[in-house]
Amino acid sequence: MPRTIDRYEVQRLLQAGAQLVDVMPAAEYAEQHLPGAINLPLRQLDRLAGERLDRDRPVIVYCYDNQ
Picture 1 (cartoon, helix red, strand yellow):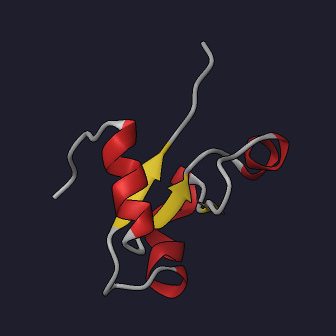
Picture 2: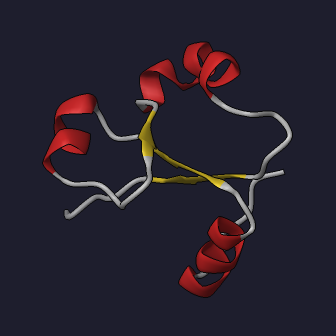
C-alpha cells in the first residue's frame, strides 16, 4: 500500500535493502537522480516493474519536479 515517508524513513529502508525507483522520463533521470536509483519511467512502470523489481524487497518510488 503506498504511503508518504520522510527522508529518515527512506534512509532506514534503503539500509534495510529497499529498492529506489525514479519514475521520471529517461532523459531527466540521466541528468540527475539519487545514487542507487533505477529508472522506471511512470508511463512504463506497470510494464517494467514485474521484470526489474524484486517482489521480496520494499520499493521506494520518487519523482522530482522542480516546478
